[in-house]
Image: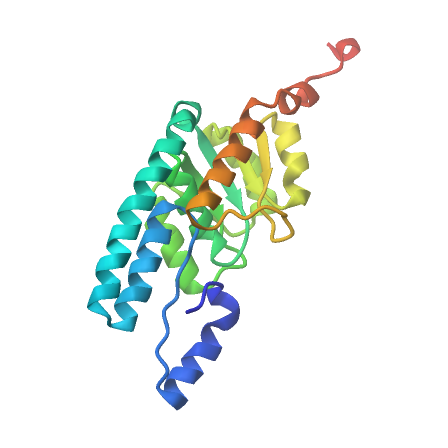
Length: 211
């Protein structure tokens, strides 16, 4: 099982070709992909009893998750996000955002593989923008698409400040997990805090003496 497809896909392909070892490529960001990933593992192992137990586990965990996500649904209703990250996160975090009810209007695919770009297009649909030069494109897209959130690495914080929108750091150095069912709750809490934080709009205002 591989999670970071960009760095390990060639290794697993060689293992399958040379030794006949099968593999599955998965994401555990968001509710849908976590559930699909668990099912894929159970199906790959070929155990009917395990598959049935996995389905029951998924139903139980999804019900618990939805109950805990209810307070966030109203906060995220109508919200739009721009995602500037790399690799499989171009689509996997987009999937998690959609599971929270946030529309992803653009995602950066400059560092993504062809397969990642294809998946990003599948998740965002025809209206979503796949950014090849996010450093130059993201600020313009925030204005054009009316985005409320920018999710990226720390260097993009200044774009969010300039545009007066909420920012969340989703770089790999973060100390909190966004993977799995509980990880989606962590992401929801961080995004709620970002959206409700007044600092982003305050720092974007002109100084009183400049008016």
